[in-house]
Length: 400
Image (cartoon, rainbow, N blue to C red; front, top):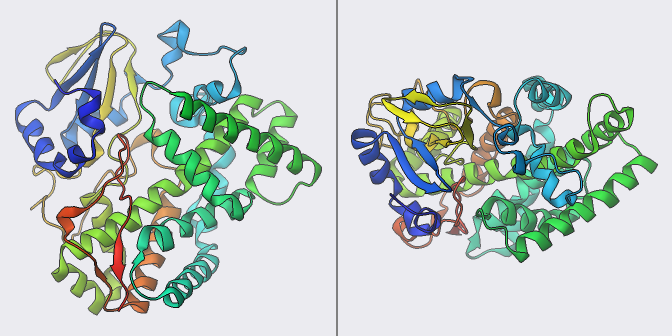
């Protein structure tokens, strides 16, 4: 078995794909660790991940299994905010919550954002040109592009984006032991949202936060706890995946110069390159947790009631039984049925937005900096210490 400490180490991220390959062949339903009599299982094969994400035999709301884990209305909001997230509830609550925000993320609505996203990308590129010399592509482009877009969509101040980055990093990097730094950052985040909600009530606008506050005040479709949970989720999920898509995708291109040159010569295959980037270095390494509602047999093993099951999307997307030459980065790969955005009712709400932002990012960067190259060797990459996500801490590049 591997420990939490091992999984969270950045060097585990560097060597994880050979490890996943071994698991798919030798132990595709892997008992990763045990805690208080319950096992955490990791599913690694494509077909098994698909089965897990489609089935209703596993649930998202652990409070129905562990009475101490949910619904404490006396707990501070920074604790309750994780009990009502759309990612962690089941129908009918999940259906109700998703319907509230779905109209803002449908493909037609997202496509209308294209001119604004292009404008933001152009401005960021101009800033990079003015700086000249080596730049960190994550800090200067991959992070600000999606955080500005989601901030405008939600109606939160763009100038607060570094705060969102800090709070987001705290949340996605947190282990089971939520230390004082986590508690402090979450308290700051909740206090920030409280002030934001008060301002929106006084001065509502045509943005997502204002509309969700209206639903909360009506008291029929959204509770106070759900409002806080939804905004925390949208701020974090609304940029983390795209930051990693852009950063990981450009890193994969630098790692495979023949594919980079192919893309430079032919921008018509950029959408295929985006899909291959999502498959090859999946921005989300693992699905969020699912729990066995009862003892059951899965893939030849007995999973007990209360056991946690995680789908390794990254492993599924490198499954040699599903993808030809699965460990080869091919920007012309088609078809490409990866599961980087999940599957089923919890399929990523922001997938159309992430794809559009990724497409515009690749187009703009390759056009503006046709000779851009990575500084250092790809093997020296510095991955963030996160379990659920895969993203680079930095990506230093020469622009000319």
